Length: 85
Image 1 (tube, rainbow, N blue to C red):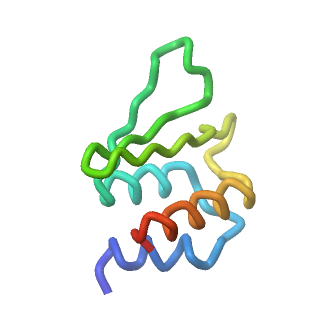
Image 2 (image 1 turned 180 degrees about the vertical axis):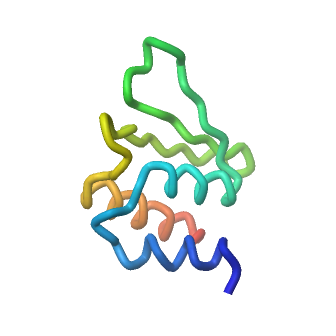
């Protein structure tokens, strides 16, 4: 099983310790680009994929890196809707 397949399998498990870094890496492997509006964007980060114009907004957690279980679930469900999982 490749790292990419392991990353997809991990988010499907809805782990409570899933990190923003893991989500960012998975989205990049799925073809998304990270957009940040600089200092004015706050903790909201936009991921955009030009091929199908899909947009994902994530809250960058702070001070740690762990995402909330609800955010992980929402991301997983959206990626399923797109057919990426």
